[in-house]
Every structure is written in structure tokens, then in C-alpha cells.
Image (cartoon, rainbow, N blue to C red; front, side, top):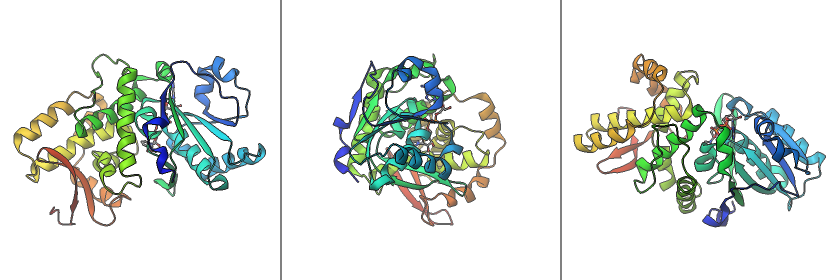
Length: 324
Ligand SMILES: NC(=O)c1ccc[n+]([C@@H]2O[C@H](COP(=O)([O-])OP(=O)(O)OC[C@H]3O[C@@H](n4cnc5c(N)ncnc54)[C@H](O)[C@@H]3O)[C@@H](O)[C@H]2O)c1
């Protein structure tokens, strides 16, 4: 792992994007369609990929290795990756394993990619129906945030990134809260602030063994909700709901008092939950989610939850009978 790459110098804001002139380029096919002037001016070899959870697979990984071989990619050449988290997770894994690792520059094109997926060096693809079962830690040597990409991002996708920003604010109240009300794009400084915060947390715990695990707040409940709904609930929406469930659970377990609970729920109530998702949620018995939570690969047999405890949010290990 290039631990030294997890530093603020790796991150850069580029209001005007110039096409790269050396190396290879991988991009979300939708982005290529949306930005013909930019991608039309690219003179290096381009590989277009479809975005989506179902595309993070071995078949596409093999296609990327083939693309690298076809163009005799050497270890000192740069692979430039343009796209959201599904593209960067897959492409970064390919780059991290080809010839034991080539150079990687990421250009996240979704809000979730900018504040989360492109930051911190986790790569991954799905296998045997399990999310990110195969992966590596391989931070990009450069992450370029071009907020202009957000102008074409649908509200549904923007909201998923905002959910991760809300989670970060729950953990680190000094961070700016996005404006959920008017469907307004977060400003560049706020995006950069969130990205830098994640980068610094990852730098202190590059392999996700201590503090970085806090970033899983809302994720155990959220992942279970996503699976239970057959992925009809989007990831960010599920995380926002998962944070609510974590707060409810903490109150039930008397890990927080009413005042600590109410203030967190007030913040969470600002998220624009889509009404159909809330209707669906009302039909679920939270006990049905438990088996799915035990399957979570981060749980290591015990149930590990990130929960509000008093004024803090902490990693709590639970035994099968629910005691902390
Ligand atoms: N590696 C990490 O640390 C990490 C962290 C969080 C999430 N992730 C992963 O990220 C993935 C989700 O990422 P995502 O939400 O960016 O999904 P995504 O890459 O599937 O993009 C979402 C949708 O937006 C489209 N899109 C991308 N950029 C666009 C643009 N500028 N304008 C219009 N449409 C655009 C895509 O084509 C796609 O349809 C998941 O697989 C998750 O596991 C990884």
C-alpha cells in the first residue's frame, strides 16, 4: 500500500479539465456520451465501461486486463479513471493488480465518488453475490475533483452522495451539512472539505482496523435494508435510514439518553427520504434484518455495530444475545 499517497496533496480541485496526454483512459460510457467535447479531444486509448453494481465483476476485470495488455501498459504509465464509485472500484482494482500495480489517477464524476468512493484507496468487485468480496487497498496517486461533472448528475444520484455527507456530519459535526431542501449542488469547498476529512481519517487508519471503521455508521443496518429490499432501496437512502435505525437501537439499549437521541434524530430528519422508501420501510420488521446483519463481512462472527454512545459514535461489539 502506498500509504504516503493518503495525504491532502493527492487531492486537487480542477474547475477546468484538460484531457490527459499520456497513459490509458477508462471512463463510464454515460460520461463519454454526456461530455463529447472533452472525451472527443482525448488522444490516448480509451476503454468505456458501463456503470452499475452488476458491472463490478470478473468479466469486466478481464476486459480491463485485456485493454492494458493490448496497449502494453507499463508500470510507470498512468491509468486515468473517469466515473462514479462502481467504475473507480473496478478500474482501481485492475490497476492495483496488473503487473503488481500501475499508476492511478481518479476523476470521480458522482458526488458519492468525490466525497467517498475515490478517497482512501479501497478497490473492489463483487463475486458470488457478495459486495466487494474481492478487493485491495490501493490509493490513487492523484484524485481530481471536477465539480462540473455534477451538473449532469440526476437528483437521485446526487442524494446518494449527500447521504454520505450527512453521515460524515453525524460523525464530525465540524463538517458542512449539504442543503437538502432545494436540491442544490453542494459547493466546491464543502465537497473538498468532506474529501479531505475522509482522506485524513484513512491516513490514520489505512487498513480499516480502528477509527476508519466509524465510517460504517448506518452501514450495517443500511446494507441489510438494501439486501432485504433486493436493492430497490438505493445505497445512500439505505444508509440514511440505517443511521436512524442505529439511533433507535442505541436508545433501546440505553446507550444514549433522550436528549442525545433527539438531537441526532433532528439532524437525520433533514434528509429528503423518498416517500416510497418510507412506505416500504413501514412494512419491515427490524428483526428480519438481523440475519442479514450477521452475514456482513465486516462482522467477523460477532455483530459489530457503529452506534451512538452518549455524545460519541463508537464501534460496539454485540454478542448473539444482544448484550454490548
Ligand atoms: N472504494 C470505496 O471506498 C467506496 C466507498 C463508497 C462507495 N463505494 C462504491 O461506490 C459504488 C457507488 O458509486 P456511485 O454512486 O458513484 O455509482 P455509479 O458509479 O454506479 O454511478 C451512479 C450512476 O450515475 C451515472 N453517472 C456517473 N457520473 C455521472 C455524471 N457526471 N452525470 C450523469 N450521470 C453520471 C452512472 O452512469 C450511474 O448510472 C458502489 O459500488 C460502492 O460499493 C466505494
